[in-house]
Amino acid sequence: MEKKFKIGLYGSFGHQIGLEIYEDDITEIAAVCKLSNYFMDELKNLGKGGFKVYATLDEMLEDEELDLISLCSPQRCDQEDDAIKCLKAGKHVYAEKPAAFTEDGIARILDAAKKAGKEFHEMADSVYVEPYWSVRKAVRDGKVGEVVQVYVQKSYPMNVNSRPQNEKKDGGLVRQAGIHAIRFLEHITGLTVEKVNVCQTHLGNINPNEGLFTASSWMMELSNGGVASACINYLNPRGFGRWGNESVRIFGTEGMIEITDGGKHTHLYTHEEDLGEVDTANSDCKDFFMEIVKHLKFGSELPMSQEEELHPLRVVIRAFDSAKVTSVK
Image (cartoon, rainbow, N blue to C red; front, side, top):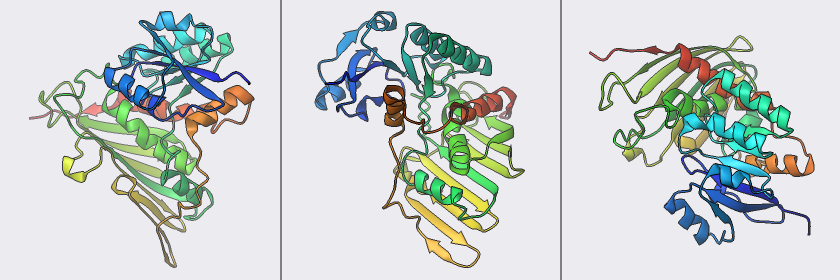
């Protein structure tokens, strides 16, 4: 039997892949490190036993059998250095967002990957689920004509007593939550954000003028001359019933398409007719991570170019660096 692609999981502060990946003839969770007790129990409940447990990342990187490390570092500000350490140890890396806090950090990671002959990828799977994938297909098939204006929203619950007040922990509102919205925008339309202006506030936080940012508003210019705006916040009310409250509206020269209510509903309109919900029944959406694995193991085509994958990260880094902060009176 051909050797399985062996994966090490480091950290569970984020969307670690262990609950999604399935053991088959291709992949195997072979080692774990710094996982929460909850996460360890979930892995065992799913029958994913037999993996090695390491105390430190350095120890896990000495395991010559591992092909890739999935990073959800306990402190997101450490993840850039963790990624470089993994690459230098001869492992491919799949990293939670934001994978770096600066564009220099992205360059350092990619340079380390090139020198090691390994690949670095971010967990950039935001549109590789329904209904985002089918809306992507509709837009790229020209159903709304040329894209002129886009609105995107990403809203998480507040949880001021548990959400990190220090953005070094998870990347913060603009970089950690905002990146989903920019992926929706770029990875659905195929356009890129060329200019971005952001205003953010601490209003509603337990510390009104410091710590956790609670909301931000974005204005953007797109690569085709179109415009976009984004609403990003930690204000999703519990009564909404879903952890994430996402919306996407794309206005084009031939119509409008939308995703609303956290992905529950879609709608496509043209100038002539109401076409109703977007068809997701015949979806050809593939699992993003498994496509990465197949590329690394068999040489198949990547689901997107590395620049397309990482450009939303570049956008949110620029947005954070230039953001205006309101003063709470």
